[in-house]
Image 1 (tube, rainbow, N blue to C red):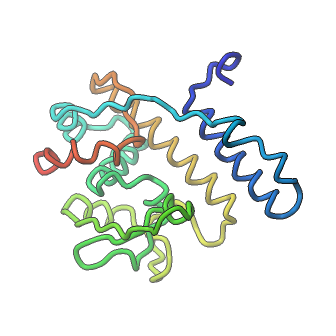
Image 2: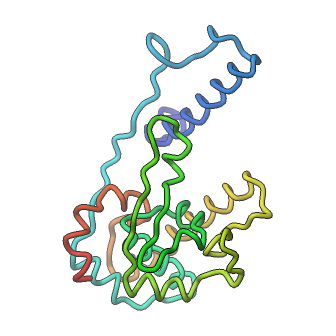
Length: 212
């Protein structure tokens, strides 16, 4: 993948961690023998990505906040990107999985989908204080179906299979990143901005969030 296809170590890591999960399940189900497991000590070690994610500057954030999108797709991308930003870097999957009962009077309280499925540590309840921008976003994009246990935003639905939900979230994340990048490029920002890494740079952003 690296030598012939030019893929990064981060991409290799993503695919092989999924493959490792399949091996573990196959061994648990008795389909494969433990000695066929290809990962671990003295075997193949999955690489860890070393991609450097840079934070946007205060002036760039201001430009993105005040800029005028050039299409309806860019409007949606900008709105979701800034909702994620104000929600302490909440990723698109967690936004898609938000339910009405996650919204309290002045906050959102949720568990990250990523930590709920790892089993490595106890999931931590995350509190996000709602600001005016987030309330406006909620009013604009909330689903018309407001069942308490229903999803807040019309990205996925309970009628979808787990595979369909996964693919819809993946496609929607690509949609947000693609159109937000084109919006940023229109404003003269050359950095490849995306939803990836917002939570990584939360502490950098928090100091200037109220000014943006």
